[in-house]
Length: 155
Image 1 (tube, helix red, strand yellow):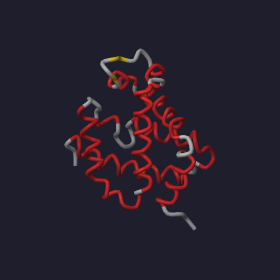
Image 2 (tube, rainbow, N blue to C red):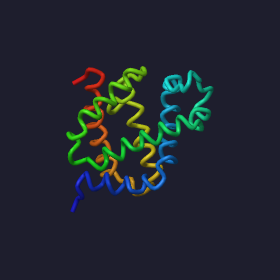
Image 3 (cartoon, helix red, strand yellow):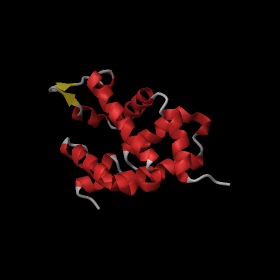
Image 4 (spheres, rainbow, N blue to C red):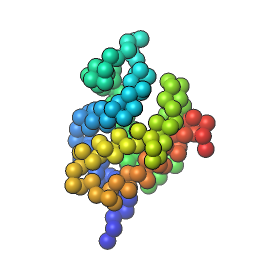
């Protein structure tokens, strides 16, 4: 019998949540490889990072990784009822728009953020990252991006 999407997401997230900083670093390393133009958007106290490695090792960016992983965890634990996170996710969209992130970076199918998320999950889960698990996370990601897109003024 096929397991529900929300169960696949929660079960796979348990493996990731054992070391969120490590896996979040994989996600952002991949993101900077795919879309290097995002690196200059991350500045703390006016400091520009000279390289992705410089950024990924800064305490401020490590805090950002922790926050992103908490957002993913929140979405994973509310997979059955993402509507309860609508306003929160729209607010995240507004914050990203305000710092210059383009919605296209999040686009489903072609966006580098979703690809980086799936890459991180695959690296973390190995053979447990089955086609059904990939599909479950893709569905969740689509729903999260749809909610976030309201913060960019999208529908």
